[in-house]
Amino acid sequence: MVAVTTQIVPPDGVELHLPENRWADLDGPVRYVDFGGPADGPVIVCVHGLGGSLVNWLALAPRLTQTFHVLALDLAGHGLTEAAGRGTDVHSNRRLLDRFLREVVGGPVILFGNSMGGLITLLQADKSRDLVTGMVLVDPALPRPGLQKSDPMVAKAFAAYALPMIGERVLRKRNRTLSPEQLVAETLALCCVDPGRVPDAVKKASVALVLDRKHHASPEKAFLGAARSLLKLLARPKRYLTAIARVPQPTLLIFGAKDRLVPLSSGERAARGRPDWRFAVHPDLGHVPMLEDAAWTAEAILNWLVTEGATAARAATRF
Image (tube, rainbow, N blue to C red; front, side, top):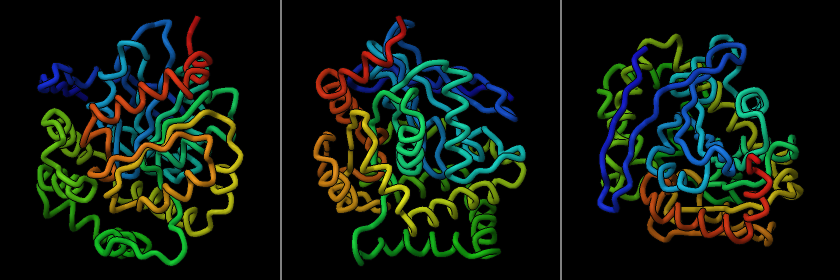
């Protein structure tokens, strides 16, 4: 498989390019990339969300690598990491992440997680406190408070995903009838307030990924395995809420106030329960702040990493 490299220089001078693919054998190939950074600096590992990939960190990572060593991986059934007989559900991918941290990274890290990746990050932090020194949770998947209704488009999509055979049929039809460019545009329209803010390099890398994934076996089954496990966990959130209440690591919780998939009220409830976490909200961003406004997201992260997150950074430093 040929690695696709895209490159642009945004107005602020930050160069975006997707590093060469690396592969780890964790009961099957796992794709990851090393965005670079000081060899002896604090290590950050980025975990994408449902239907995402390591491309989701392309706009953010270069803004952190002057000080931090940044890596990202594709979870099983996502990006270029095929399921290959492995589970693609939340808990299977949490175990895959644990192995990646122990066998590939080989030391303590700060975990960044977006959406489902935020949920996996938090469960990993609770399970392996020796490995996770701190967390940045970017619009993590969270239970909805009370009887708050979902966004109609989101509710319709996830209702279809939950139904056996219906979900598979919906996804196959979507993947068959929409071009790669249309698939990327549709996803960004759901996740962003203004998809025009997402750098062209990210869009091009996302289209290239859609083309590469056409050769994968049963991508719909892999996606639905993850989606259905996420829905089940959020419908019975006791274990997850317990983990939120007890994890000891310093944490930055970032939210886009106009997130259609995870409402701000869910983030506000989590922040009230953990007043020791820093809570940063952008009033005009959606579900993927690190793509829609990478500069704002990086500023929030870097400020936290030299204040409340400084102990996490020191603990994740390679000496």
